[in-house]
Length: 381
Image (cartoon, rainbow, N blue to C red; front, side, top):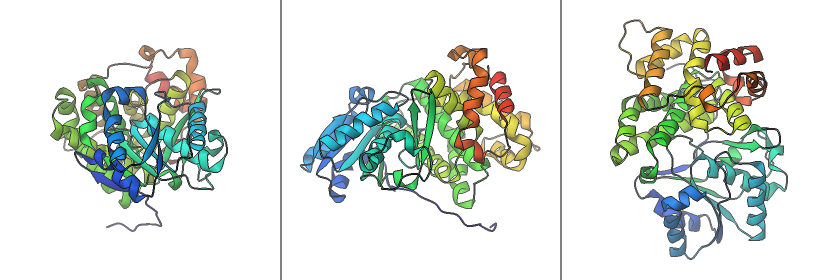
């Protein structure tokens, strides 16, 4: 085994498996919660998953207040409204059930409620002075991994840019990962969140902050997704496949939370903030183009990724890897280019400038200028 330089690794307590969501009340009681803010969104409520959490809290006689005013890319003002509700209701814990949006919003609510500052003031790394309340997260998508990560991505709606808050203070206390909750995802959301998880794993593996502690998780995630994502998209009711993709998402989350990410996410954050586009879709469109740009700076690592993706060539090439990613994306039904997502050519310099300021770019294996990022956007246009 290679020498490990000084590294830290943060992760929540994890309960994985069908039925995990129904333990929310028990774990809330263990954390001495008496009045929970339950952060979710209208889609999750309509899917019925919030009812299970309410029942689990009722069984333990724990009070709760639902906050569901959360957009697909959570806005800073939604976080601030949630914090007002948290404090007004005298809550003492937060449970979030949903995809990345309600979970990111819940993290923001927690830190605002305890630190009494605007959420945008926490942008960057380790800016949180007072830890938030206990967090129990139940993910309902298999891709964002907000339930195991030290990231919260919030939209600054005035500047039309997503900010990244990175701190071990927002790693949830408990992650209840229940594959059954992903059954209600449609084909396209399954594909986009799966490609998001793959991007997490790929970027973590080639990150300048990667280590043997993170590699083991990234490698496992890439392998599982390569072998199962396409089949899972075609067989949405197969709980065994759902379980595999959910497990891969968790592995990818543990990898990127500790190794950080790269240019794909910097550029996706810029796109999502400026044009309010779905995050997983943005990652899927950009991944092959960023690999093409990065390859020479981390060829050995990308070649290993090629092996994990099932490329059988004796000598794996840059083109092999890019084509494999394109094939995976196409086979799961993600066919859009940036122009088909509503991006205009005149937007590209602005997008590149915003992406260049994103903290995820710091761990990208190859240094990228604004012009480099603009060219990558052009190639994905």
